[in-house]
Amino acid sequence: CCCCCLALIGATNLTGGLRRCQSRSSCATPTPSHTPDVDECVTNTHSCGASERCVNTVGSFVCELQVTCPAGYQRRNSVCEDVDECVLRTHNCGVGFVCENTVGSFLCNPKHKCISGFTQDSHGNCIDINECNSLSEPCSSGFNCINTVGSYTCQQKIIKCSHGYHASPDGAKCVDIDECQMGTHRCGVGQICHNLPGSYRCDCQTGYQYDALRKGCTDVNECWRYPGRLCAQTCENTPGSYHCSCTAGFSLAFDGKNCEDVNECDKNPCSQECANIYGSYQCYCRQGYYLKEDGHTCEDIDECSQSIGNLCSFQCVNVAGSYQCACPPQGYTMSANGRTCRDIDECTSGSHNCSYGQTCFNLQGGFRCLSFECPQNYKKVSDTRCERISCPSNSVDCHNSPVRITYYQLSFQTNIIIPAQIFRIGPSPAYSGDHIVIGITKGNEEGYFNTRKLNSFTGAVYLQRQVREPKDFLIDVEMKLLRQGTFTSFLARIYVFITTSTVKHTSLPVNQRESRAFRL
Image (cartoon, rainbow, N blue to C red; front, side, top):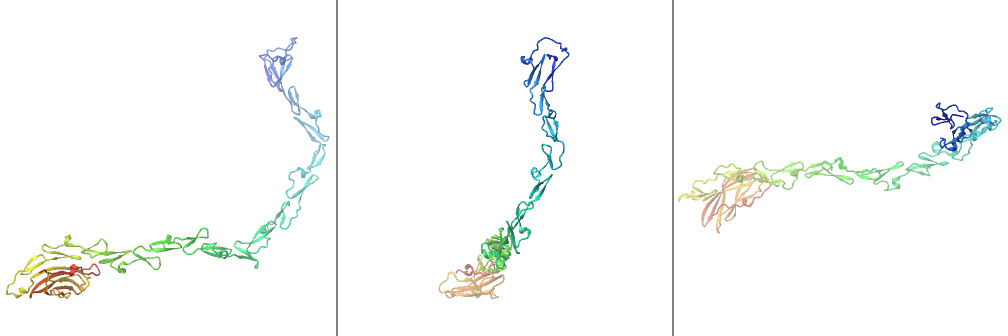
């Protein structure tokens, strides 16, 4: 009887689910007793767990694990122990085998080993291995497996293929012969070989067609076959194809078919202005230029030499693309229209240099300072008129002298058209029966002037020679009036100033052509 496990005695788990009591020297050697055993398992005073089974012992109990042993094992004292099938002769080894125990099982080892290609049957006999069945792929594709004693062989399959086919490398199937790749076709020069299943076809290259008479491929003229459909403008046939081109002023578009207008103006072909038009361009010139015959260059127009009319009143100066009008350097200023020279009136503006007592007379392009003085026996009755004072009764010369002297100022330009009537003279008022005689008595030594009668009481002074340079004249024109049987003399002292012309030709204004000298 083992030592009873008291509260002070520990318990140690044993292999197989048993627990052993450990004494703390408080348990004495048991002595026989006649006290009846207490079955702790029945009284439920044991300390076994839920997965343990309580087994009562004399004076104590043990806790056994509830264990189910696998095949090849048996339970002993709550422990699964290996079963030695060889000792117990529970093995199934044949006569030609020796039993060898293993943990949980056994092995049947043959008494004699078989050579390669053989295996032992259940009786220990060596039998041939059929590798053709046991191996998954004993031979390569296209070969048949043939079993032999102790081994096997691979024999190539024999397959018969129709024309245009041959056996595959493994001999398993018939595959097409690519005559085009192998070069066994009979396509002609310029033809393209196309492989077909079991055969091939000879086709002409793109842009060619088969000619049965020539038995060859000939070029297709796409431009003739598809007129107006391939190219927008010009179609040019080429060997096996065609090419689209465009006329001048166009460029071939990206699609190779259509033509796009070329903007020639981007390359600045014109010397001045360029206007792009469809398929071409046009050069233009700015105002004041003309386009030369080359169609590109602009040349300046010399308006001064080509003008039919009068562009400028005095002088035309050609400039690039235009012209400018100029006036004489002194005495003129340019009008607002930029063409006409306008006289500067120095007398009015006060820019003259006439002294006191002189009269400023404005001219075209200048001025004159004039002094009007009366001769002896005359008195000044106005700024421009002198009258005779008196004559002795016996002085014929005095009585024949003019009773009145009047000063006049006339201004003309060198381009005046001759003959030009510049002055008209006559009595004012005139009466019936009046007759006059006129003549130039002084200042006409070069013969530029002359007189004529317009009627019995009116005369005129006219310019009969062209004055080409600026020139000043002072002429005396005498008019003798016959009235009621008496002659009376009058003198017109005329300043005639010829200045530089600012226009090509002028006619006289009326107030310069017709001026009456006297009023009686």
